Length: 75
Image (cartoon, rainbow, N blue to C red; front, side):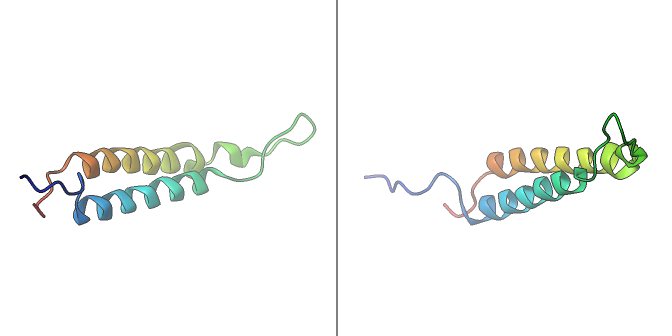
């Protein structure tokens, strides 16, 4: 009878955990004060919120896919 273990190994979960941290950090970098009709806040167009944070999130999502797809070496 074949040994049926988990589909993902320890290395998969480590990569997925790092990817999750990237995604959380990216969303945290996107936060900040908002602009309203009464008060305009130019920081909504900052490099951090427009370029850096979305790229960090995107890298996290790609890393999550890699973490799921890499071959489990534990078996």
